[in-house]
Length: 158
Image 1 (spheres, rainbow, N blue to C red):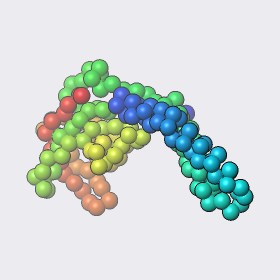
Image 2 (image 1 turned 60 degrees about the horizontal axis):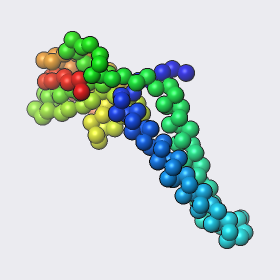
Image 3 (image 1 turned 135 degrees about the vertical axis):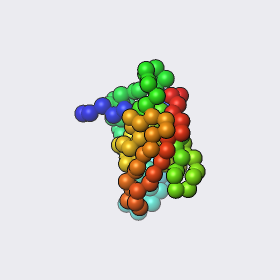
Image 4 (image 1 turned 180 degrees about the vertical axis):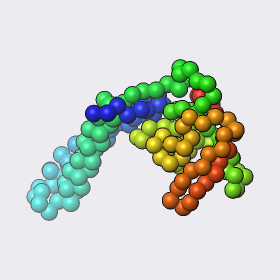
């Protein structure tokens, strides 16, 4: 199985989610199943079926997170020598040349990517376009809605 890069912050978040699932959510759903069983006939017991379904989701997520952590290649951008180029884990500020607005992104792995939090997957169109570029470079990103043009304003390794 291929190693998937992840930031320290992303790994910590996954570990916290795994602990919460194992120590909080799993015991609650087990108790809900036991309580629903006590009500008798399981065929027509909606609470039992809902709790079993929830248990399946929790166990699936526990396995998924375990696999992600097992195949994670943790990259600490603060310990990598850099020459001003955008690399995995770096935080980039770009200027949208159409709207003249600045946007900041962090280049991350697929399991921590979240556009609402400005965390961009390094294999996404914008991630691929930014990797290897430097401050003042112009970048053209091909998106489903057309081409976007950016100028790189700043690169941080935090």
